[in-house]
Image 1: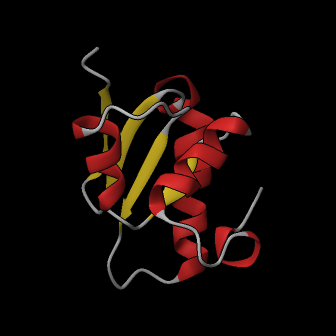
Image 2: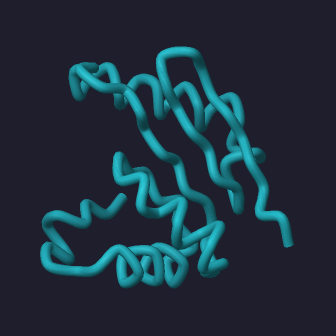
Amino acid sequence: MTYVAETMPAASDKDVLTKATELRAVLVTTDKDFGELVFRQELTHCGVVLLRLFGCPFPERVDVVLELLSAYADKVEDGFTVVDRNGFRFRRDPY
């Protein structure tokens, strides 16, 4: 696991997505700008999980991500997943 704030603190979103792709890693973020990079700019990625869990304590966010990955790893890989209080929504790239 790589924590971008520690390893790439001044990196652009595009650079973060590129690094995650180089590492063959799923990117977990709270930044919805990654949707723009994935769907409008069609940048290559290995999967993005967008957390929309406002006000949720960090330990609970971790639990939700672990639940997501243990139950739906196949859907998360190479897809775009939105996690909110209603559950998980999965999208694949349209191309």
